[in-house]
Length: 229
Image 1 (tube, helix red, strand yellow):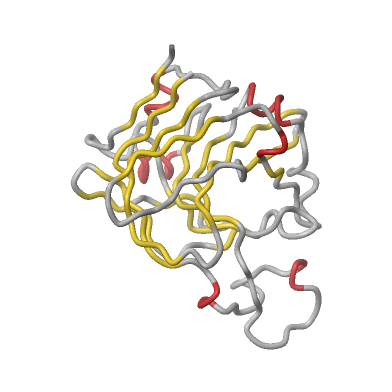
Image 2: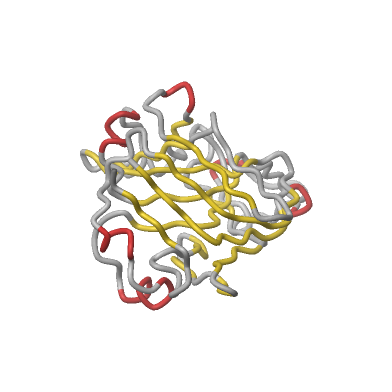
């Protein structure tokens, strides 16, 4: 049974965070063989309604291809790709050893898988299963069942349908050739004061200020990731 295991004892192994659409990837804090993601996190607005909504991207790793120079600098060698685990996540079991302190504000920590098929990038969030961030270390597992009732398709905001869209879950799980992520979803994005126009056509924190008090705060320490098939 193929196994991917990352302990972060020798760097981030290809895992990284995200600054913004324009800023791109950022390095994760590293301490005592762990990687750490801390708030404030960027509000990902690529899937604003009529898509599935907003989220925070805490941890992510490419599942195929060669990273660009900047990504290599911040995330180190991608040991997922180097291990030859592959991109078929159908019924894969993902286990995390983690701890942290998190004001969730109604969100949950979920797995997100993404694949590009026919020129369209489709993301599916495993909303039927989630991870609980606790102050003490715990191991928790989710399973990538090919059942769309356990997942939420991200879709696209009004002006990104040329790139983001909907491909059947079974297709994406069979070839998640873009990346996998750990995300906080769904966010309650509220404009701070009146704004001109539809907020979902604008970009939170870029085109208008938001009430940060309604968004998650805290940190998550990731000590180990295992993926089995």
